[in-house]
Image: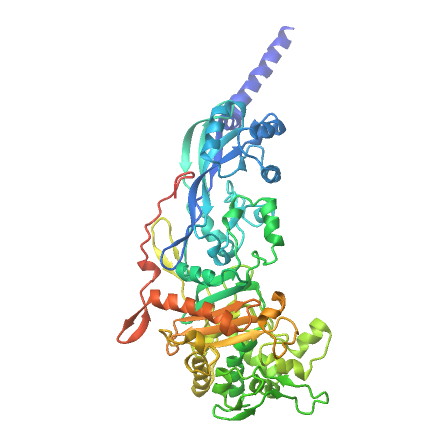
Length: 624
């Protein structure tokens, strides 16, 4: 028995030596972890400015109600009891339960964002009743311009499981929001920054005692966009009460100055989760406010395609600049057994017409004949050089590419042959031809620069939030459209006469305007309805009325801005879209230009000259 006792003591001593000496580090670490937690500190999201330093997206202080699941003994009972302290909707509970499945039990999960001061005070008094539940200060994304900027800037929303699958989980620890649309989504990684960590000592109940060490997060980059906030608001106000889109571009470098879709919606609704009722109202709205018409709206370009068609005819030798062609009230395809008449908008015709007059007076018959002589293949080959039929690859989300049809496309998409009539109506921007407002603005910018092209862009410069250093983004030049200078002159003269001569289709809208504008009106049918000679637009059901379009650039001799406007069911482009473009051109040229040596030039507005103060590393919960 003595030997047995000695043996047992020997085993006990050996075990103590193993635990306290050999495996000391392992158990010391476990003991340390029982009282020390590592908490992720999400980085402040980068700010977004317009070209003049106006804040478009900022971070504002906000309080959230956070839950640590492993510290809550009765989750269902806790959620029910919390309803008497803070306002919790079924949507809040649903999103919280979805987030629970994506988190570890020791990780905090937000239950409610943007608590009111009254709710914070009520919870503080009764906090003892809710173990594992606490108030946390955060920075909440806020869009001061509301719906005026959402089509370009986009918005953030609560991060979901699908998004977490495509990011670095370690860097996104503690991150609750993610870019959903627009610039916010396209430049998500730049705006996000790098996560920081706090080493926190806690007591047996999990309550924080002190912070042992702190590794600060690195804020996301601040973005300076090419947008002009004032111009954006002017375009939105000009389109108010109508469906449509407006895009403005600096033709010298591709800067997108305005990108507006109407009607719009407030992106702040989506930041902390939109209610099911409000989202259903947006989705069911007949005017489709969630649809970004500027990027994804595909419209027949109508007569706005005629300057490009004229240039195609000149470049391919089908017509000459001084050639006179008789244009009566209609045109027929030679040899057509059906003898179908393709009618001009003017019942009396236009008489002898050259290429400049055809653009100035928007002579349909001239372009019916021109399209037939060119043929659809040559039309496709030339117009595609201006970007028609393909996406511009602008630095944002949700862009559609338009359609520039060919016989091969029709066989593939519709299993039908191509008819000569398809070519004829394509010559006036009808039929299968589709373009987005962004494509029209991009093509107009190239036209104004006589073929020099740049990829449209929204990001103009990036600012380091620590040092304040601004790095400007260079313009992305594209393959130019090269034709003879005399061809450019003939086409641009016709566009200039559209607004400057009494017989121009937009002369009434630009009479007395302070700047010389080159433009082109367009009217595109949305259905095959036929207007009688005595019918008026008011007698036609709204959804059957024509779309109005207008493209323009100014000043005509040295362009600083190019615009494209589409007004759905607005009727003629001269009465619906041209006034919108006039307001945009007037605002931009008045507020952004000055005269030097008798010439209109842009005022300096380089990002390096913006009055932006360097941003110091911001603590979570500190005001931005």
